[in-house]
Length: 82
Image (tube, rainbow, N blue to C red):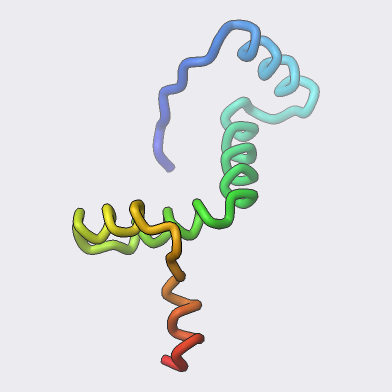
């Protein structure tokens, strides 16, 4: 796991603290769940992020970000029977 510093306004913090108490979860757990849900809902961005994580160099990363019409490695392999 990685440590993350986060700045939020006081009202949001107090709401998170209250929900944390009610749900018997840490605020960190709630944030992890929220981020996972956010990423899962944004499939295209998730695919681009995965491609960036697999990229070999900066040029390839910039190409992925500039190109809206991309295909994942798995889809490419299945499309061309690789």
